[in-house]
Image (cartoon, rainbow, N blue to C red):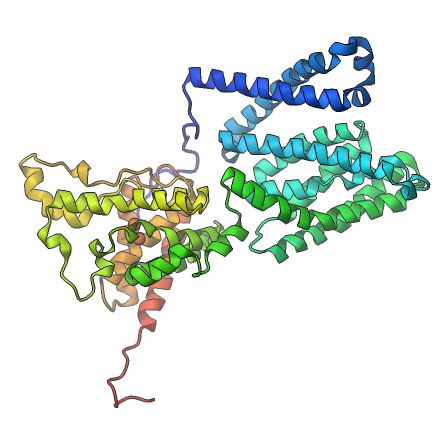
Length: 500
Ligand SMILES: [Fe+2]
Ligand SMILES: [Fe+2]
């Protein structure tokens, strides 16, 4: 990669959900009214217990006055905190969907915390010998922090853990040991949920969190209240950690279906060829299916090389060209042994058909609920790159000013994530190297370098966080895999002449 322009890591993106000032105003108003209503319900249910002094002063109007005051305080807190974090930490620029998800999760946690504490207090067997304060060590914050890390990212899970700890500690009458425990346990859970490709791994994360929770609970109980409930605190802390895996596994499918997220577990499920879209791709467009599997292998290698998400790269690559299912015969990889239909078509018509596979792919991804991460990659895998194969054919039209080069560009958007950029690079290089037949490793390397440079200088990587170092590493990884595949191809012996 010979280009040496400044790195793109610090490039500023416009807000993902950039709404007009008027739209933003209505959204803030709706959000405020919504949160006010939720807080009013909470105050009505538990206000007297949680804020006895304020409840005594305000009498019957307490739930409403308290709700308005708390909404204002929470709104200020969230706008200051997430506003600051969103400006300075790129990964915390949350879309409206993420904010709604986090708020729902925090509220669910509050209800879960209240339910745990109130229900345990009702059990007669626990009444004697177990101090009620240790019930707080069962508040399932580790599970929720793990869910946020798996579905959004680590930065957001840290912020969520802090905000949700405060809210959940309120359910435990705002005690210091509860708050400190929740902060620690949530962080421990989120820290261990780095890559979770299957359910077993999620259970393992919970099991690894359990000793930390047990130790933290016992130590906090001992330091704040002496030796009385240390054993129970340790047991409850351990149970909390052990249950965090199953609870996270129960919450995740609901969150995925309601908010359109796709965890690595869901991605692994989608990678099976039993999925109707992949079966159709395999049966109806074997050329595209083979190309997609190859792109997946290359993208996975590229992702591993720079610490991006290899599961997302491999699975999104499998689906990146599903839009070709609509008119498979128009794509070169499915034309083996048949006439090229584009020979009899105008370049404009060919362009329209080929460009449509991105739009069709996004539509089908929505229809089959593949999740936002895969859908976005399908929409971005060609960025705004030029359709070179028909550009040459259209040269006479361009010279006569009946067409322009810009018309032969994909509509975009450009890749927004490292994973989308890796798939764009893998897609373009796979197609180029395939057309070489049986290249030498050096030819493969030169072709990959040429394609990567072309994509870079065309500005296709301007909106993602791939650094020049990453770009070089991805190019090298793709080149190595392609060279190995080209070298590994063997000519089958003619019938009757070779070994059996
Ligand atoms: Fe494509
Ligand atoms: Fe492709």
